[in-house]
Image (cartoon, rainbow, N blue to C red; front, side):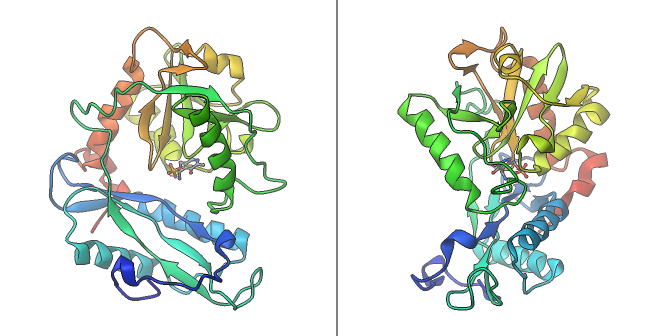
Length: 300
Ligand code: PMP
């Protein structure tokens, strides 16, 4: 926190912090060789994540008082100080310091918490094939003329929270947003991909989505490595209902298969064969077992 490795209990701030003005990133580091095992960690797609943090900062008027290289070193130091040897989630958070001016602040907190998480990927992982019933939210995704979904700002997650709570209240496991035009947008914390006739389709950046690093990764990896055609275009609600498979993708979501949307089961098999194939290959990429994709990994 602010340049020092300290215990979470000591990471204290004033109750007067302008907590609604923060930005953050969500990054993961996976175990080399076998993501279900223990060992050395590699950070996945460090550069695009940290570049996005800088873009979020520019949009929100935040000046990050460190270089990108310093944040990488700090992240490594934090992981080492904890002695982590299993998969971890890294969440750099930046917000104005209390009393330094709210909307035009000059000083900022930079905190990089790191914690363990359980992956849903990897060999025979039962978490992967769990049933997940989704609904289309009655809340529309925020749009870029009011609160830009392209910036990874905490304020955007108030919108996600409304949709997630609605889904929970109605007995669903999650929600899919439509954008304000009525086209399919994204999940509450992940992007959406559907499979129709062997092709993977995902909404464009102009459909009020976060420019997801995982989505960007898949748009390259699917056609180049797996020969799966991809299409970026608007998706109608009915196409989502009538898809053969659908899954969420994101740093947190990894690959999360969707069983049904509004109680309409998707496809004949769950998880679908293409979703399964993508998840299995992605796990190998994350573990560093795919030579040509080792450039996506940064060793801790
Ligand atoms: N959309 C939203 C709203 C998110 O919070 C996330 C998670 N960061 C994503 C999409 C997926 O983005 P990424 O692949 O960069 O994690």
